[in-house]
Image 1 (tube, rainbow, N blue to C red):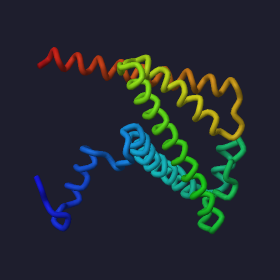
Image 2: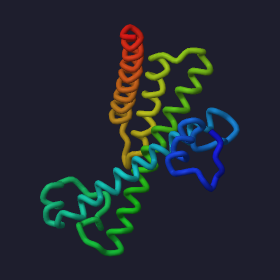
Image 3: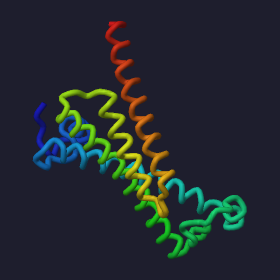
Image 4: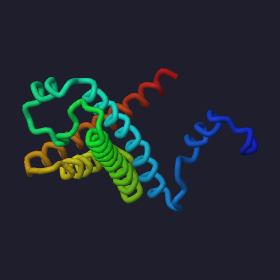
Length: 177
């Protein structure tokens, strides 16, 4: 299907992303990392805006009464002033960066391990999940050894489970057909 740029619809543009991705940086590893980063960062930004939007709907007394722990963004108190907006942008940016970092790193590690080992299996997912979990834990304000270890174990467990369930689902669909 060849259409000129002027007659392509938004739906055609979105379909083209499934074929080649967002980027062509000259190497599949770079393309995969950049594409995963951008997609996950967008999700992180939406999550951050939604979370901060719900905070702004509550009054400042509700926030301080419900959250006894220290607020990392003290100017977000349900107000609609410049400091509140700046804090929301900072929070959303941090959330986007964390999500993008996690997705890009995981995608890059799984691709690298697949190319190095010649196999795409649960072992690649476990290593990538553990390294990604550790990296995300290190982006916290005060990472401790216990938190980094917990995040590594959680990342490895989640990615391994996802890999095994995906493989199981593929095997199941082959038997049904």
